[in-house]
Image (tube, rainbow, N blue to C red; front, side, top):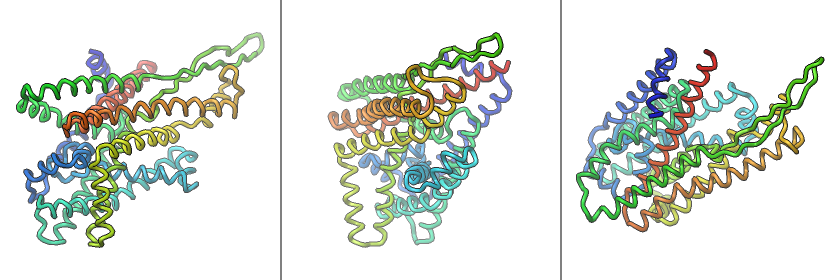
Length: 424
């Protein structure tokens, strides 16, 4: 009911209507790309490969179902996300990159993002080349010569670049994060097919699996909503100023610090990083060097080990929660802004003491937020190990992404609407 009212309010303003139209247009183009297939593929063998390996199920999440259709955008946004992760990690190593991202404002971040786009091209080509070669060796696609292999790799790379461009265009509309919305729309587009398949294959024997999974899905949704809404309110007091015979200030308010500052980004980053090593290993196998083949086999064995995979997934989600929070939340800048506005935390001196206090508070919140988010992320895997059912882990991750992105998008729309009401 609230969403319907929100959508009605959104359509009242002409500029917002236009932006909503453009967002839906870009999502439509994405779904169109996701259904334009590459030639000479054996879909039955591809489906069998999906059922046997959860790795490809994760790639399918990123591609929004484009991989299962074997479309020209089969890698989705995975290479772009991997490129951004690499650059953000490099900010801890190269001071120039850190200065560009943190200190040079919008111009610096635009240049930083440009580096991300440039890095995406070779990453996408390497991943597409290795992945297509792997599928060719499995007999899933027919590539008569190396020219056909390079041609298809270039087409798939172009598909990733187009998706990256669409994601940035959506972000510019300020109605949600473009990358997250593309992944969100891809998952939602697969929902009817999954529900139909569950209905067709339903039996009383499967009821004992479906019921706990439904309960788990509700639990995950409730947990993500709680995580996104929970916040720590830091009290603020504005100093009193005397001007003539009048006294200004003295008001009190609070600074909201969310437990999940990073939102769903740690989940997306963690999955992208888990996908990259195996894709790179597939490319290195082409050298026919035994050492690289052993590495590929080791990575394959590791990712197929549910316990080790779940542990690594948890660690990555937890680590990226800290990493992304440190990138998006700058205690030093906030402390300076509070001091210049004449605001202070009761019992804490302005300046360095306030910065230290905010840093400690955010660190504690991020610890619990990362712990909770990591636990929710691997909860379906634990259930999968107990029930021996493959699709539950991928379904749990999909629910995690869908709920988080929906909440973030609704909040951004509400902020745009509140701005319009303020202007009126």
